[in-house]
Image (tube, rainbow, N blue to C red; front, side):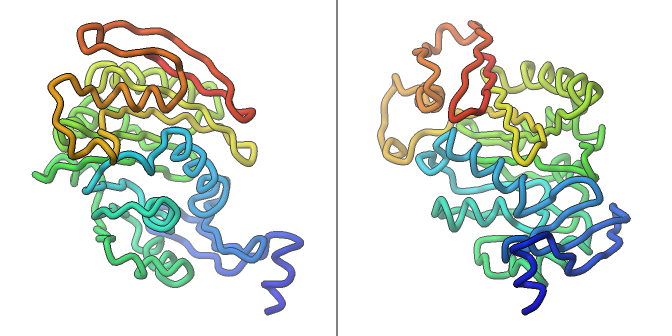
Length: 274
């Protein structure tokens, strides 16, 4: 009770653990709520939670129709909470988490077992994506060791496998920290891979709690209201870009057309390659 009170004044350490992949994992309580952090960055229910929430609102995820979700990197389950509780999405979620201590903390403090639609798999994400025969409508890549995305997840083989496991109409979201010059160079290489396998994506930069993240967002999902409509002229990507308010009309015969667009919305800068 005392720790709960003081959490409204400053972050209070609740438990410190050494994980299987990270030497430093901590559960803190801040403003009365738990969050999971590594030594240098937030993992769940802190700044990263806010960044994903801003992203989901910006791409109008509540209006997109999807049934099967693959989440690569569970953390404490904040993305699952956003999808199922805030945005009320009725979907099956398969979450990969390769650190058993992270899963233990997620159950102990964040009650991830409350999500009936969540299936947690302890397995390396690269191996799973390479071997699975399942197809997913929405794939979210949120794979970090501290503030680094392991290099294996920015290789051509991994991105090619992402393409293999997605449905024809799908959405792929890849989260990458871009704090340093090295991070930005890595991101440019990743961007080139997406141009090969997922042409027509957007790049959205978000700064939350002083941390800079860039999200690559590819989307051809239909809107919920149109999921039952049958039209030979329907282009799901058109709705997605319209929702981003970029002001362009897309035509399937001009898919090679690209424009670099920078817009500012709610004091956040968004960069889109169209």
